[in-house]
Amino acid sequence: MRKTLLDAAQHLMAQGIIPSVAELAEHAQVSRATAYRYFPSQSALIAAVVDESLGPILAWNSMSTDAATRVDELLRFAFPRLEAHEAPLRAAIMVSLQQHAEASAGKAGLEPRLVRGHRVDILKRAIAPLASDLTPAQQDRVAQALSLVYGSEVFLVLKDIWKLELPEITDVVRWTAQAIIRQAQADADDKP
View 1 (tube, one colour):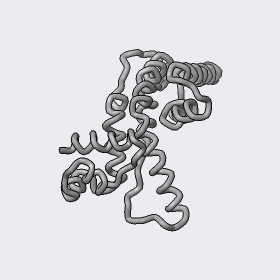
View 2: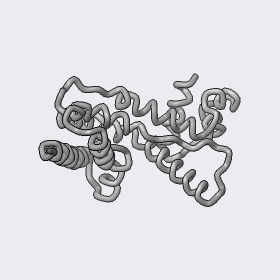
View 3: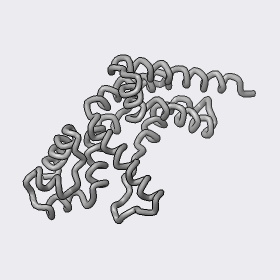
View 4: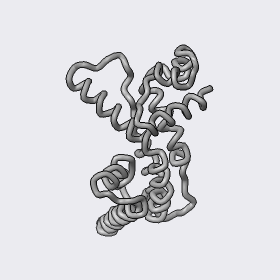
């Protein structure tokens, strides 16, 4: 039943609809109680759809011992998946921004906040080979810099604002990531 509900939610999101749990129940032709049993809130629903969409990315790993190669593999693997599941990613960003605005205005309801942020662990795994050359603070800085070129926000900026297609998007993020890695390696070489 959970998979059926997730598929129905993805279908609605592909149509530009960010469903509430009640709307999902109606669309999937199940009782509200059933839908709420699996997804107690819209935030839980969207988080589950995003996790389902990004599952292979979340499980990504590399056998390479070179950080630049690992980061490049991650980007080439992840960005086609981001494109394929663009609708749920847009929904997650929209709900997250809406919840932030409501909280800032003092109008936060009982709905739990949508928690995002898988990229920290993924990027730390990608740059793991740098651990022998960089301090933990330097490793964090590299991961933080890479978070500016990896993720759904970057994909959407390059697609919506720059009007790039997937091959061009991937090329830009790969180029930028390699520059970040080269700079980190140069910084490591310069340390006393």
